[in-house]
Image (cartoon, rainbow, N blue to C red; front, side, top):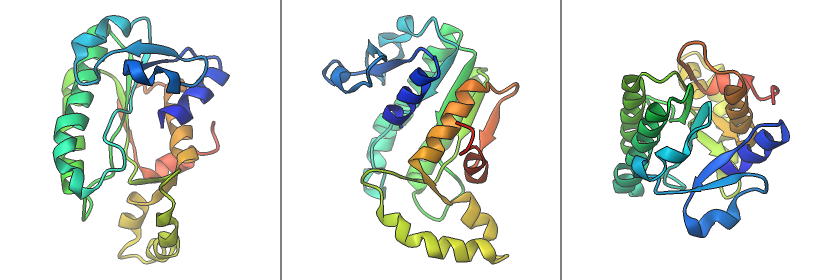
Length: 205
């Protein structure tokens, strides 16, 4: 998501800095400034957060699956807490966190970790936007397109409509547009964007 979001931010005149491991600096989009640090340790990058008005937290285990439950506890949750703590210490005015849609009938370990991160964010006192996608289609994530007809049917049936919309599929362009909108429209009060709301922002970027 970061490699999709950063070029759009730069194209619209924003300054973007990204936390990266030293060996990954070459992967940053041109024009973005690299901040070397350990995403699991706020102390390693908190001094490099200012000056900034928005912190976008995107660190997490790639391609989440039930088999990766231990990694959610050792990577996703510590990274979220470190980002939140660093942003709070740096006086960031708006924190953006990509969580996950819940409740859901699967991926309980992933949901539990993201909910704990949301709780930590609420307790921090930061003003925030939380996005709750379920599944984001993108490079290497195309097979769920086969489920589109099933989703379309479920959205038409009263008994399954709410769940199908809340756990709907999103494209990378849709989640990127919602992130960009969130950056450019800081929440006057903290807010949560569900899948239908994320979809509604697709034409705003």
